[in-house]
Image (tube, rainbow, N blue to C red; front, side, top):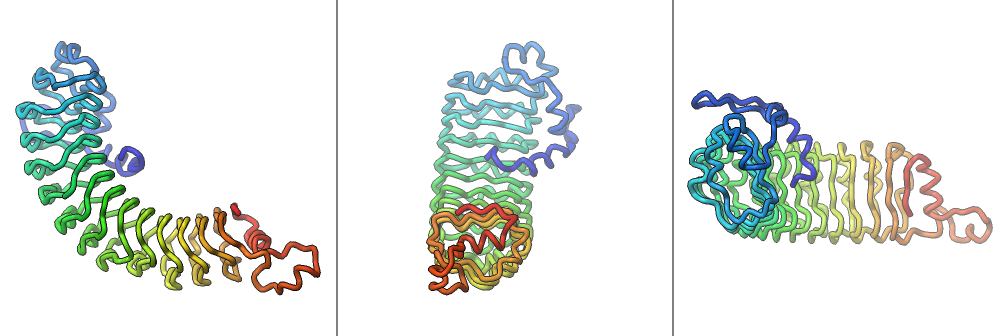
Length: 375
């Protein structure tokens, strides 16, 4: 997940927190970044009153040293890339100020219920373990903003995540989910939802309640063209990725997501585009690579904001007659299409009467002189 969420994470870095107990101050992410990161437990224990950040990452640990509990000010703990198979239930009893916990790549099959005691936890990285379920107590992490579960073995998503009302990023890529609970709509602060590489066939009917959602990743699932009508209410959605699914018709509800800027539909079964595509007036990038499209409707020329269009690997012989409206188009990929040797509007016999290149390719190049075109 650590690949594409930087704008949102940077925004989170400027939030300041006040401790609700004792005299230990909860520091902002910006403040924590300025402090020393301890990478030796012995050094940390010798200087325990000053330790806020500890990383024991990639140290071939087979169990978690319980001496960590002596670090009363600890707010960042990285135990990733070890060979841990269990977490002692008592570990989290004395780490009340922990804000960031990283356990990625540790072979963990389960989490202890005591994780719910981390009342100040905001970032929880559990990617690439072997988790099949989450503990009920995870719903107690009321301040959690980032939950990364990529690369686990989750087959269902329990309703215990409903309590995560402040969650902004949820990464479930590369699990075994075939559906989502309707209760996911209760995550009203969610901005990023990554569901790539699962077995999803349908989306929850009330997914439109995620009205703060900006990024939705659905690549590599088994979705067809039936999308919930509530998606029209995703007013903040700007990035939608649907590559490698079973979509044969552009879902009409997607045409009505007014603020959508990036839409990827590569490697589907689409054979035509509706004239109503003209409604997607904020679209900047459209990827239709490797479908079965034979004709592009003239109405697509009304997409004045379009900067990048990928039509590679379709069945196009011609583009619309008037391409002059696409002067703002920066990139156009037409590779692996059977473009006609005779330009649109030209008579076939004229090809033998003149040496001038009047192919469709030449016509496109002439009408779009400032666009980077790949044939």
